[in-house]
Image (cartoon, rainbow, N blue to C red; front, side):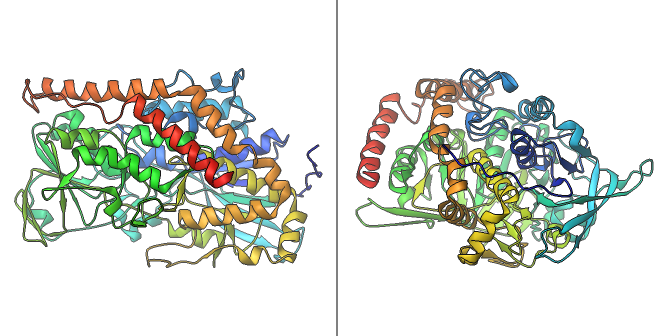
Length: 573
């Protein structure tokens, strides 16, 4: 029988800043344990979080699969036979749009009874620690200001007042004060802040932008009006996840062609490859991942007249036999099939280089090449919010914990890849595990004390502001940091391990239950063919252009299951 020590009783409620995915998930875990003694703060007028309410475009889709991302993901809530939030999402779109996703956050908050605890349109402006950090009865006094935080639901029109392309001076905007409501203070005994990773677009201004003479903006936050693009040659600057999203949108509106301009290429993951990783238990090897990617790259990805091999990427470190590899990449996988389809039809060209300057409808590159185009979309990455460090008084992040304080947790969505095995391209299972871990140490503080005494906490990875680059706040750590911390804490805490030991098996079950192999292949192939039809209808390719076979077959993917089974038997006996 699993030991269940009594939950620690605090003088004040739990505090959660952010009503996005992680904020709601943390509240769901507390609610499942029988607690409604928590309060959630968020600047927006509804739940859903910054990434989906503001950073996403109107046309944005979830790039990973919904079954391993849905907000009620978890063995306690989403399983065959459950009716909570409609049960497991067996009939939901595999890759839903922003406008399909947001209602699921609202429904979850309603069915879990979280809305009465949500203080929407509020900004936590200050936090004071009352008592010594070593005192069991310490608490955190939060100063809360009612605000009217701007957001929009229409694509185009440029930036809102608090966005403006990554200018730190503009990021002091936290919403206009709502004079109809009074500021107030709330005391909390534990505090988690989930600001997300996709906060501000990285500001990159090129010489001569004012001379370009065409649409030019950051391709996030609903700034760009894509109705200006039909029939035009477009350059997308960047090669991350938002680039994949904008390739799809540009193709849907009927551009003439696309340049993807980047300093170096990042690995891009086709849909079946992402699906295969997210159902895998145990993880697949990086070498198998690269071989699956190579199957798509070898057919369609050519740069400078050379067929691109994923094994040759700057981010790949492998042996000569190609049996072992580690992938180290600053950004996560962009996921999408149209990246490959557009190249197969000659609608997309990847160009390596940097913009040296712009003139009218021309990008002059540092390689000497000139790109003639009529519109520019910037997908230059996103930065963290330095106000988080200031509010939480962060000197360093020890794992997920502020200054090693188990009652102050914080994380953006840890970015990047550093792995020799892969079990996720989605954030849902990781968020689920993180929420359980945070709540565990809130409710079992003696377990944390035991780890302190055993010097385990001293072994947690540490991240400080300015690492590895000056633009990184302390809370904005990498996926490697988060993964190392999770493995260490779970391995050192049998109680926590018991709460998470079925996570891999659950992930595999829910993915295959909702999206079996036959369904993902059928729907991915149908989407591929829909774009082929669209290209012809829009006159983007000749009507008699040869059709292109889909990237993978069901037989190929079934063979991957056999290879993974052999790998798992050899590695895990």
